[in-house]
Length: 106
Image (cartoon, rainbow, N blue to C red; front, side):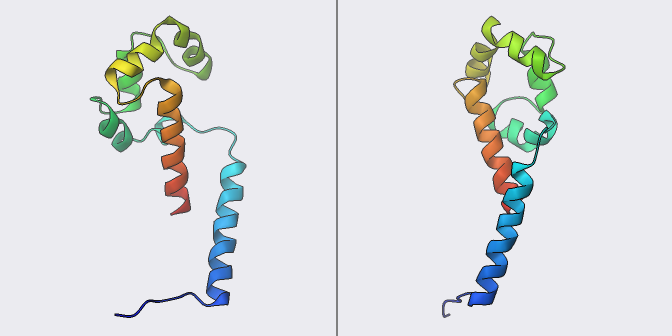
């Protein structure tokens, strides 16, 4: 079976579509944690079923971004290191963002 190549028009249309998607991603101001950390992501990298279960198991009362930032110096990063495949919250967040972008780009 031979290789298929995009012609100039098809390639330009695909690149324009990707560019529009990137613009939409760049305009994102807020993203709910349950969107950024879908259940599949949490199950893949932790022993928890969803992000709420993971946050609750941390022993910290986390209901907003401020709570999350406040608990980090108080053992939250250590919890993430022990209970997930990540060294800390930043590495877990970075992976989640990368996977979210990958899904958005299709």
